[in-house]
Length: 145
Image (tube, rainbow, N blue to C red):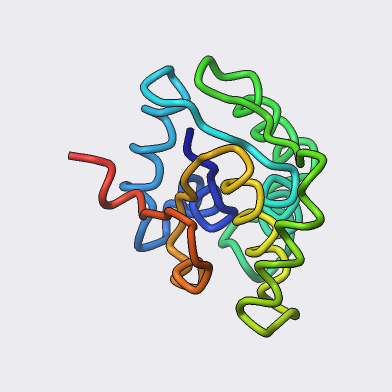
C-alpha cells in the first residue's frame, strides 16, 4: 500500500502545477486498481482546504466540487481509507522525538506513523519525509513510466 500526501492530490488536479501530469497519471492508474492507495483524512481535508482557497489556484473549486473529488477518490477500486491503529500515539510520539520538532512536521509525522503502522510507503514530493527513520517514501516520478 502507498499512502498519498496532500501535495500529490493537489498536483493531480492543478493543471498549472509542474508535477501535474506525473501526479495525475500515477494517482489515476493506482486508484483504478493498479495499486492500493491509502487515503488518510488529514491530506484529504488539506486538499479541500487548499483547493477552495482563493489565490492559490487559478480557479478555486467550490466546497461541493472539492468534496465530490475526495469522495470519488475514496470510492475508487484501489482506494483504502487509512486510520490510526491503537499504537498510533506511541509511533507518532517517537517520530516527533526523533526529529526533535513539531510545527510543520506534525502532519508529516502523523502520515509517517500511519505508513509505519500499516507497513506502507508514503507518496509525496515533500522531502521532509526523509527525516523519519524507518519510513519508506517515494515520489510519483519514480512510479510512472
